[in-house]
Length: 286
Image 1 (cartoon, rainbow, N blue to C red):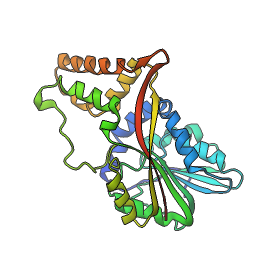
Image 2: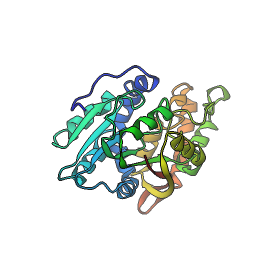
Image 3: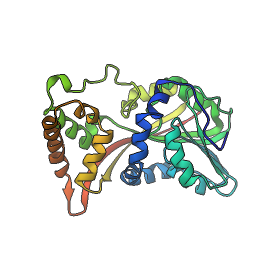
Image 4: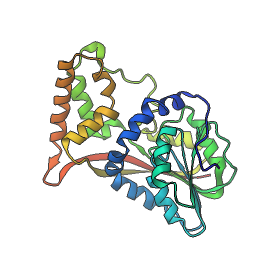
């Protein structure tokens, strides 16, 4: 594994994450880290990385989880952070590239030649829902696990189980002309945040890729989203309706934003803006 990013083939995912998608995530990653703090702690506890272990962090993003894992596996262990986006990995390298037992590699999990039986732990926080070919990618990851190793990842449950996204989206869409309303995806399992939300589908995907002892633990948590303005900006950058609002007249876009703001204000309390979240913590053995 190289310490510096390498070029990868131009899949759909590669084009997106090395274009606007990667730029957007790089801009918002600090907000994401704050939003995901509690969920990350739960996932890290379940993964239970140990001193001496070799770890692969898939879709590692800005490298925060990699750095934490690298600290956990000392002495003797090492972490490879892998992501398809050179843009995002540049941030990871700048912020966390100094650790001797941590390296970053740009790669598409569906096509990269991973070393066989190399890792004790394959870990991912919201990084495995975007594979262009999930069966191929998950088989590749299984082959990279030692016989005694484990797969541990977090993914979103359904959008309806995450009302701060669902309700704000519905409120915005109601303000848009019919021709500008985003259509539901033709394939509910297409790459995207909710691609692994369906429990039966994800179980079948993993067992089909050769995993055993597949467990899906529902995690209900509270995300602390700072304030309404920050949360609204975040949803407009990353949420399902952000692009649609760029295509409509300004008055319609403003009406949609006001509707989203009203929904978010319903979650405010004396402690700030706290919204319920719903995820899976998924574990499996090779």
